[in-house]
Image (tube, each protein chain N blue to C red):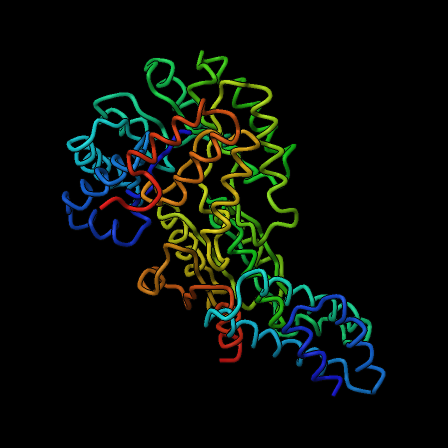
Length: 210
Length: 269
């Protein structure tokens, strides 16, 4: 009953009510990791709703905020690293491009799916993507964003450099952004392309499960 | 209100197709429609890879100026492309755009210094990105104006874009934009302040409502220029109405004339 309540409150983005609901569920003896999984599946529902147009970006945002509040209550009860148990994801907007709102939404949804996200920000040079991987053991995915047709070459350059790295087989490369297409992603050698934050989170989970 | 017609832009899928196929009639039709709807400038954006951009803009600009005498806003994220493409215009227009990033200003402002008829849009972003708060955007603004003074470019040739972001991810409505717009307006009464209006409503339902509300509030703060679709009759009507409401239209004559010209209101049969 309380677990269902937590799920429902996250889906509806009730950030003020989630902490108490999570605490109630913990007090009933439900394992913290189970509550975390419930919130993650609530975010899956949110993602699906966004993709089929029943909800809009703000509703996705408040759901993620609600989950974050819930995770804060769970943290002392979770094994360390459990909240980002699926692994680390590096994300950034490529060199020459300052657009970040879409990238931020993707980061938020991927985090809500159970990953630990390292956000390099905007205008990220190729070397920084590479060194971020090398400085952070446990990175499963590198995600690159480009919003302008004119920064697509920078995206290509970034993915080319990632493809040439000695550790390439240990990591998956995802790309996205308004002018990006599956065709372009295939051409430059990325592992995956997704059109929005919700599908990105779903795809990220598939990539690490494979 | 200065209206920069936004409909000839390669980031719009049907336009990208027309550009790729060199469908001149399509581009010309869009230019004529916007001119008839009351545009002040016709924006021209290729949205193609940089290697093809100058040639593509050349073709597009030829199409536009073959059917209208309105000045053109040459639109590209590349300063290098802009320095070449502006020459294709047969009369001075608007350079869209510069910002505080890199050496954009140092490439573009000399052109404005030499070609006194040209105007420019200046975005308040710099190498740190899009500043999160008003104070930081105004810092970029001050730097841009210092450069403008250095190159002898009068404020009335500059359109400051305070950078309109999506409302749905804002925590304080349009407070940042309003603060920037009103501060800029107070400092330079003759400067132009512009915005890509439809950015505000991205990913909200019934975007039109948000776009219209934003336009009114921004004009109230000092916006006098906008990048939008002039064939959107509701938007044009609200703009003329707001100018009259702000006391910028003696006897509401502009409003009445625009109505008579058929720019808004019921379509005359």
